[in-house]
Length: 287
Image 1 (cartoon, helix red, strand yellow):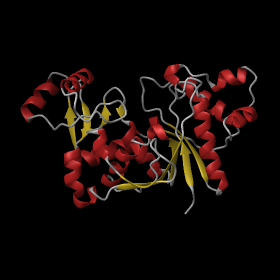
Image 2 (cartoon, rainbow, N blue to C red):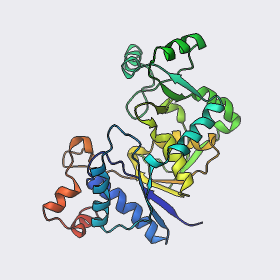
Image 3 (cartoon, rainbow, N blue to C red):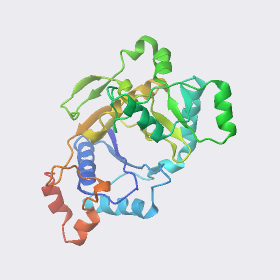
């Protein structure tokens, strides 16, 4: 089996050291075994993605010395594939419309401080479809909604296979998790798979694309380790192959914070403008 991995940045800002470390880690892993390295542009969030950021991704990765196959897959051009997956899940009765706002969800959690509070931002939602008359009234009123995956329905659909869900971790999660990992999608709750402002959500798009591109190894930061639990569930529901996962450590700054776009981490463009060479950056990253 050919080793296939990918780098999948979102063009919502300029790349920084953390992106460089992840990109070089995946690229080197593919080169070491004579495998394939793919670049995917995850630009489904129309509210934040910008053409100038996408152009900068190509420029920065080329400066680092990376090479990738062309044409590059762009998620904004894959809406039909995502819609087909969404329709399949909806046809199985696994989705429901959620009309609650984010503020309402957070208020509910505040009234139940001893709830699980798991997931990437501490928000776990479990719900169900509204009665038909209430849902029809909200739709007639033009109330926005999101499509959520019902964990209760998913468990029913999978039957005994639910308890056997797992994925193989070749790297390490944030707490050192490695080897065969039991999947626990319930820790994320009923995740949103589509909504009007962004369209299809990350979890659904990534499993559809990994399968379409024949990705065998998902190499990414351990901050995305929790996402593997939900993605493994979606792979099972959609009859998609499960890749191996290899999560790596995160780079941190002098204050111990991981590099992040929202914190205005020093970008690769700024490093290059300051005279830093790609070779020097690779040495700094121990690569």
